[in-house]
Length: 106
Image 1 (cartoon, rainbow, N blue to C red):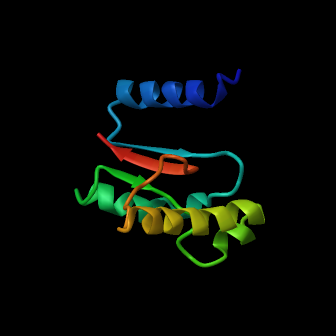
Image 2: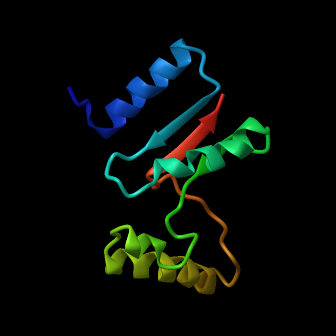
């Protein structure tokens, strides 16, 4: 029975904590993130270089569009960060939890 997106995350984290997992990976089930990249995303966690890794379909040009992202979202993802930089007259570095692929280390 589905618990909704947040409920399913809680169940997954609870499961991982009770079984003393070192790393938790959450991948949306919509098929837009390739589970084949998980081993590469795990490396910084396993090597102690990061506590969290956030996947992005925007890293390689046009990958998000090829993966099914609507054009208006793709354009918005390209323009909005730059407009923030112009508005604040300095680069704004940020990350987002709004990704379909996240990994955390204990």
